[in-house]
Length: 241
Image 1: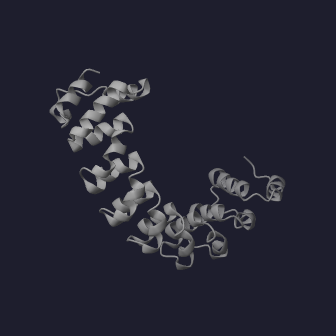
Image 2: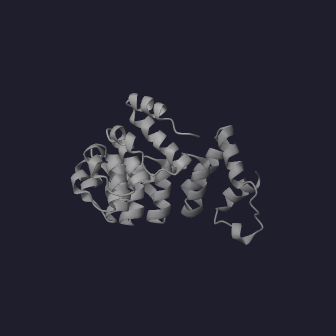
Image 3: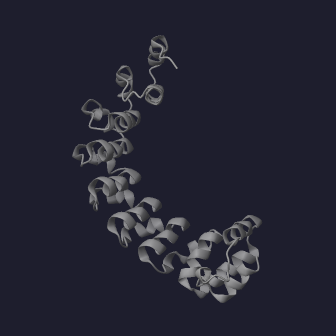
């Protein structure tokens, strides 16, 4: 493909930062160009695409774009991680307002707890779970209220962080999907969990039962490796699928 100056001039005339960024990607793919100087004046006006351009093409600090990038928490966190490779104090007030950006900034930039971002992080189940697992590396009571509202994150929090039963969230976990519940049941050995599993299997939708069949299909129950610590009532049920 040949570059067309006429086409590039028309593209820039649209005034669209996303189009300019995507064209820069194409130039990089087709011609090995690391930067497209003609498009930077337009790209630099949008925080998301300015950050992506800095991360993917410049790969080092881009001071001219920082006053724009700092306006968006996700853009600022990514820029600090991949371009500055260090704290960006001027952007922390913005980053701390967004749960995902704050969690990423704490994990990948600071490498430690970040009290200023914890209020936002604690309100999002997935971010709170990941922050507890990857940053705190232990239970985080302040985030458990949010985590306990998401069956998936509650299950993984019990498995990866608590490393055992989490009674406060068991009803939510058990009443969610059969597959996720089954794995929790394997580790919890809870009589309540057994009863709920069998109730869910007996009364679950066709989709639920199909999901469970796919989950256990192909398991060689004679192999000691697959002799999961599943309570007897449930194992008999699974073997009958």
